Image 1 (spheres, rainbow, N blue to C red):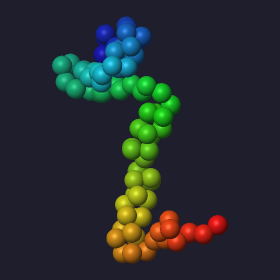
Image 2: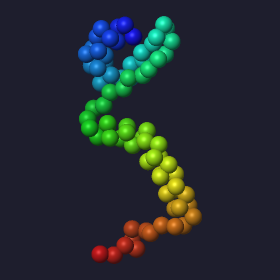
Image 3: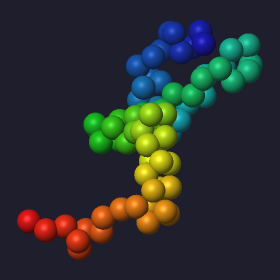
Image 4: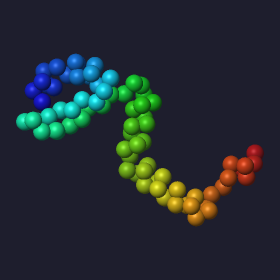
Length: 76
């Protein structure tokens, strides 16, 4: 963590290429990841949003039960 505090700019450059593990007293404490662009950031937020993930699970269950409208059935 001391190194992280002292050289955050170098760490940010590194996470653009790969994840960086931060340790405290030799034990894993955090992982820092980078994003190429705003789309990557948006994707990450969706993939880790509990409310969104619960909705996906509910909607998949509805589809399995046959409760959906096919795109071909939609009209203008």
